[in-house]
Amino acid sequence: AQSVTQPDIHITVSEGASLELRCNYSYGATPYLFWYVQSPGQGLQLLLKYFSGDTLVQGIKGFEAEFKRSQSSFNLRKPSVHWSDAAEYFCAVNQGGKLIFGQGTELSVKP
Amino acid sequence: NAGVTQTPKFQVLKTGQSMTLQCAQDMNHEYMSWYRQDPGMGLRLIHYSVGAGITDQGEVPNGYNVSRSTTEDFPLRLLSAAPSQTSVYFCASSYSGGKGPHTEAFFGQGTRLTVV
Image 1 (cartoon, rainbow over the protein chains, first blue to last red):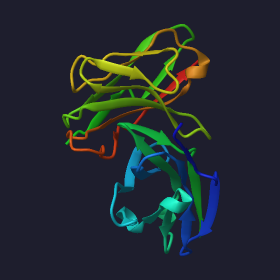
Image 2: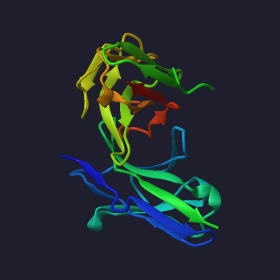
Image 3: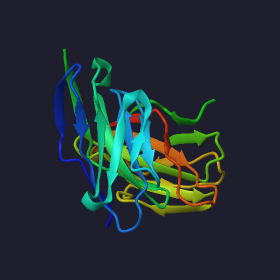
Image 4: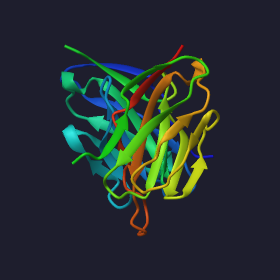
């Protein structure tokens, strides 16, 4: 069965520091991968997506992610974190119109 | 530019009561789905629909019913609410246009349901 794993439940980084959130997937075919962000009490907003082509994809708010087939990973990165980035982040794989989500990583930002 | 609209935003039910969570989208998307979000578990698929008149079960369908009579609407019915159904519910829609991979899903703002 397809699955998505986010190994880190909670990460704390200092404002201005770099960030990497990990995502590993289990999927037989070419995966269609997404990162979503959820601010407290809000719905989910798409940060970026990977369908095919260039394995480094750029998203909104300065985020990027790299697809590595050999490692079954799709890690999210940001070079310099802002306090407003504090939120919960979800990695997901599209399975025939259905999204399979990871457990989420909660990001806290220290001033 | 409404997107995906869910009502109500908040609801408190007593055990055994029934209710319907409404979801509507105005983007003519063929795919619609319902998820529940619980702490530490991410979002789990309850039911989904690939078009009007077609629905199927997801990962956690028990206790919920759905129907899809129109492209726009995809209501979720709780038949007899239980405390285990206390959760945040999200409706989502997406499309493929018949050309291959599905685009990203667009989410509603969620319904926070408490069953006492």
